[in-house]
Length: 78
Image (cartoon, rainbow, N blue to C red; front, top):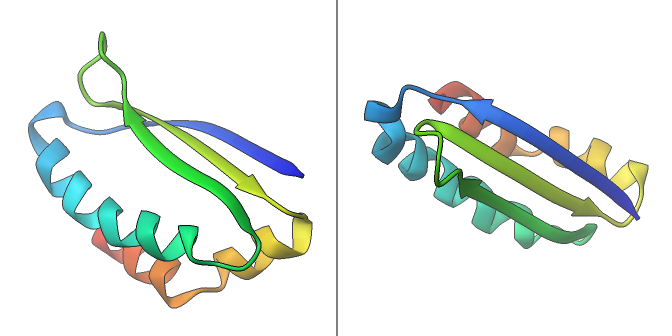
């Protein structure tokens, strides 16, 4: 199992837009064969701070994830 933990900071006023871009990414990522968990969460004390948790079955699954169309769309949308 490969665990990815990350923090991402956005303009707090833009969080609704970030959520709109992130939702399809989360849904598509969770459907990937190698994904064992994929979550984003807003920090309750720091506006604009998003916590990311990803669980991948192995390194190849994560590499495959980076090559998906939904990853490209997510990065372009940000």
